[in-house]
Length: 288
Image 1 (cartoon, rainbow, N blue to C red):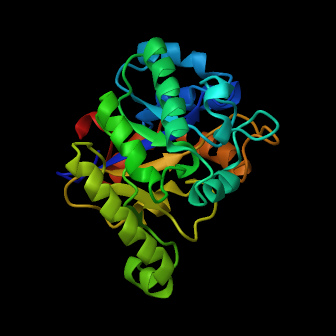
Image 2: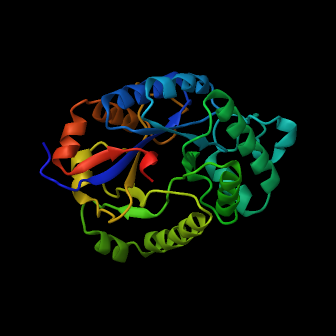
């Protein structure tokens, strides 16, 4: 039993549902364990149709759309989004996409066409998303961030991931980390301004997303991370995880073994009690 009268609220979100069966099964087991209360679906990926049972099996979970422009293939016809597609028929990888966007070799209209197609597929399968974000945070770019925010607003998606950084360093205080990593701090300030502009459009969001420098890939050391979080006063923080039941070579990018370790940590049914003992209440986007 927790001794905290006013527990800190934490949204734990699992990204990448729909990527493959191994990711889907892991997320479902973590949802069943109780600490995970939100996930987001990649409707352009091969296993996205599994999401039709998410709202039935986990009615209290927040189910969002994980808009994707850097993995898999488009939902829209290729003839309508040629700027987004590499010669192999797949989306450009993240680094190439960002470089092409910044050099204005990707049409904003084509981005909107593709994201609308992914949203329409989500709505047909599940209904309106509870929130949105993007795979590999690809929208966090000049000109692209407001474009996607505007689209989400027009589509009536009520909430989004906040990219304000809630920095929880392993080896120093948050202030010391900012002082020794000024570029990180500066980027955080820019993103915070973008987030504030999105809030003015009416999009709801958590206080920020937990960044864990020094902890390595994944959010495996959850007890230590919780102890290091500079908790926001008003809105919940969001912690993002990427669990999987096994590694799929060539699909997971830089997140490989960390997915397996996160699966073991967040499928543990005792985690809810452990979080409560630390004064943390897992919640979903419904609290916003």
